[in-house]
Image (tube, rainbow, N blue to C red):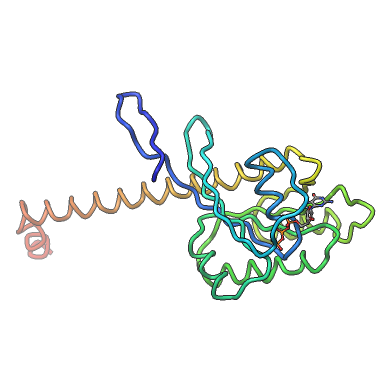
Length: 216
Ligand SMILES: Nc1nc2c(ncn2[C@@H]2O[C@H](COP(=O)(O)OP(=O)(O)OP(=O)(O)O)[C@@H](O)[C@H]2O)c(=O)[nH]1
């Protein structure tokens, strides 16, 4: 059921919804990241095969927003992943800094996303497990470079240590999605207002076009 917020004139309006999907190779810490964001707690083990969607109401820039967060499983069929991509408005790409393959997989995931969405999407890139510094296999500079190529923000996190970036990154992508939706709504309204104007012009000035043609 959609969540509602009370407006200043006493009416209720549904809060905008932002759907986020968390993508990345198995074992990079996607479930841990989502659970840390929602509960501020770290749980060491999760069922790797489980996919979960969570609903979370947050206050973003003085407005309530309902966030739906899909924690995907690392190993899934392409068709299933396409379904996730179509469902979501924004994406959190996660790799582990001690797992080079997980970093390389991000490029493939982003390409797949671009193929399915065929439009610019809001996303962030996350290099997790920075507490395992000695096992580091992907440098911060490489992460930053990839984020620049993907035109998105970059965060390094340690979900087990609970770095503040975890909260920031969810809000960053939700804020971007909200902004895009607002722009889309405005331009939709503008184009339907233009259509209405055109209909009225035709109804009340049926000869307008003819006159213009004859005066040429
Ligand atoms: N050291 C360390 N371990 C972490 C961190 N985040 C997650 N882990 C551990 O990494 C393992 C995998 O974490 P998950 O959250 O299950 O990873 P996942 O990406 O959801 O994996 P799948 O569900 O298989 O796709 C678990 O043992 C976590 O405890 C972190 O920041 N540091």
